[in-house]
Image (tube, rainbow, N blue to C red; front, side, top):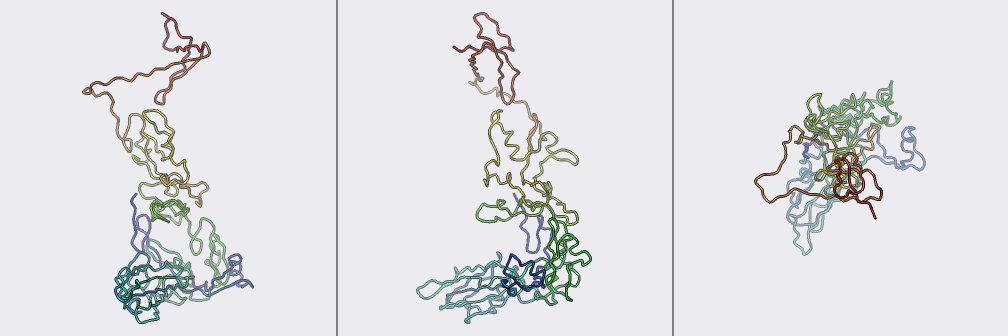
Length: 459
């Protein structure tokens, strides 16, 4: 299956949607390390005796490099720097990293660099601390490629990166203080909120992270959270939305969820679609936030765009050119034949088989009451029709008259019964005869009618 690998800043099955600026929520300054009562403490504005809190912090990572010649390459979120010489200064390293499109540096310095030496690498090893100033939250670790480094001593060069401080600030769309217009990629901020510098002050990020006055209530104060969620109260005044609703003020509907038709593997090789992670519209549709309905891409259908449409479907007409049935892979397996006879084939009967991932992909977190299976569908044509969309008519079949030495098939049926009379049916290629009655095997000269069957009586 082919799909779109979207450029930075855009997303969606057809890359038609734009991300809005992300940022830190300015009203959540503390991280409370007591999950059992954290929400109640925040709501009451109180700290309990056993609570441990700390200010939210930026991510910090450390590079250790031991080399006295050569270069290295740093990568962040799958983007790679130019070759960085071993003698690069702190200012040089900052420039190389901020040149990456995955490092936010549009309106302010993105990182700060501190070295315990003069150069990025040295024969005795240099430690370089990288503080992320505009990318918030727990960030992926920088990857260092040191294949180009050299060390004149007998030991090998070495470079490594470690996380020395996990980022604990939020990194939410519109700082969770506004609604994202995904067509434009622009935030519409809640009352008294506007664009910030990432640190609670007015700035140019476009993220709704600046409060122009003291916030004393959740969004839409006359109907907090639009009556579709619960207001946490002071000091954060955040909305916890009910199931089926989303947005900073719980004003937007969610769409049905399903496992993604197209996406990067979640873990390991050849391991896509198999996790419990689900996405709206199965990543093959666009969610209408006003109605909570998916608009599916061409070729897909279902509440969560979880079904692959069958071909041969005209407006207001059945699929498969109205000459067949539209079936899932699992359904089609039950109709499989071998030389016209039924088989015991199944598809998806064995749990967790990655070869049949499209059978048992059940959405367990859908808004709907019934689970949604992500399925490939196709046409099973009626007799006399063929083609992927059943648009073709089959021709009569027969023997090739130019081939010689061939014979017709002969099959013998032997019947042995313990009763003098009875009934029997015979089947061929999924068709069964009418009931045939039997009588004892005829003697010489006895006639046998076509609707009677002769069986030899058991001894």
